[in-house]
Image (spheres, one colour):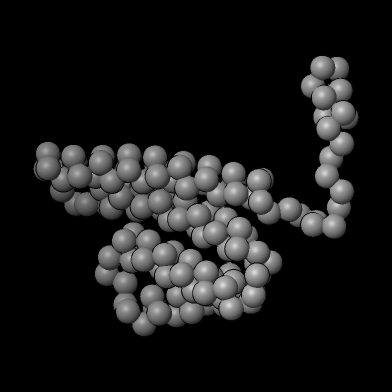
Length: 138
């Protein structure tokens, strides 16, 4: 795998996360979104040693953004100076549920990628299967 492929995936991952940020923060200035995309792309390509690591971090950030969507929706509902209408309540509850469920999905997916493909130390030997079986039964 070349570094070009890693950088391409880091750029795509940063665009995906930036698009998610734009969905959460709809009135975001374009220059702020461009800066976020560039910084995320640089961090993902610099800090990730494999494609799996790039996408594990990307999905983790999507999970955090999804959770932020639910939190921002709740805060906006509480800060209003009037009682929300029934339609506004339905849209707030829908946004909160969508945010929480998608947050759980993306964070679980990210955890699975980290656990399956991204190793803390690639030079360390894998755990002995007989020891793992012994711990479970013991």
